[in-house]
Image (cartoon, rainbow, N blue to C red):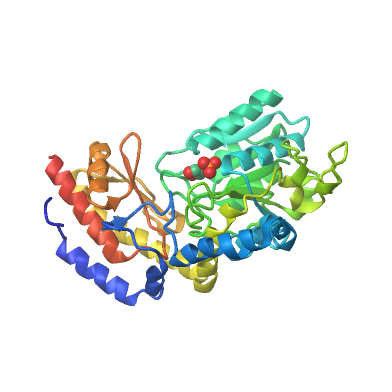
Amino acid sequence: MNPTPSLPDLAAKAAQLDAEDPLAAYRERFAGSPGLVAYLDGNSLGRPLKATRDRLAGFVDEVWAARLIRAWDEGWMDAPTELGDTIGRVCLGAAAGQTVVADSTTVLLYKLARAAAGARPGRAEIVADTENFPTDRFVLEGIAAERGLTIRWITPDPALGVRPDDVAAVVSERTALVLVSHVAFKSAYIADLPAITRIAHDAGALVLWDLCHSVGAVPVELDAHGVDLAVGCTYKYLNGGPGAPAFGYVARGLQDELRQPVQGWMGAADPFAMGPAYEPAAGIRRFISGTPPVVGMLPMRDMLELIDEAGMAAVRAKSVALTEFVVEAADEHLVPLGVRVASPRDAAVRGGHVMLEHPAFREVTARLWQRGVVPDFRPPAGMRLGLSPLSTSFTEVADGLALVAAELRAHG
Ligand SMILES: Cc1ncc(COP(=O)(O)O)c(C=O)c1O
């Protein structure tokens, strides 16, 4: 194998940024990964914390074995709403009683979108965009087929994302629901959440925000901006581990009005009454369907503690510094090799990742994985660099980018 290449000026700048980084010490709290040079995919799967190893090991003996089924009454039953409240407080600007942890994002998205469509009878349109993540589009297509609705598709500029004017042009008195991702999964464009929410409301529609690429990286203020509904992943910037459950937010004023479609016993008013008919629980609990994923809820607690300690404002500041570093380095070292920066250049509208494009990136990404540099590839030609603020150093990014440049050169 070739020796690890370096770009000396970039490495020097990275070392200086690391020395000045007030959050640098947090990196030590993550478990090591053998052979890893640069992890640039924290927006797909966050790294585990060392504390999570102890938490999981302790859970087996101290909680599961020690308390067995009694533990349902000693915290497990309340975990979806208690953990939801923590996510709401630390990351979402959401007061208690509005956020719940359950299901996968796909399933929770279905439940909330379907409930929203049902709450606006007589309105036969849903507004969505062609650049949104596949699950968001597919789920809406399923709901539209199920309920005889029409989707009004916005086709945004792929280098950006959905803008308020795009939404204003298609919403009307026929719109039941507007669904937008806050941070676009490819470009990282940050949609104008307050303005789009206002436009949807002015048309009498509900709005559902996909926060998968925001939560834990880009602060949001759901209560302050009157958001109706939101969903998001916990295995990205909340480091909940593979397949960790999703979270859903339903504004308090809407909760009793909405009827979610997967009516299970755990969202019923009294699960253990085992009664003949479904009566939804009051409040946010009604959005639960089945038995809470207790084990899957454990790891994210460690990351939430870290983010709470650091503060979302500081996390966002580091996130901006990291993406700024990548954009500047790409301009200097990768653009001359034919790379295009496909994320916004203005950090104010750029989330926690940076998309670069080059026709050779599919092969280059495969080579990089072999060499311990782990970004992800998004077709047709995108290399997505996800920079999880508390686990990523500037030096790591510089090392990764040096290998990207070396592989591009080797590829010719
Ligand atoms: C923007 C967005 N929405 C939804 C999902 C789907 O989440 P899940 O696979 O957990 O259902 C993802 C997954 O990466 C995503 O990035």
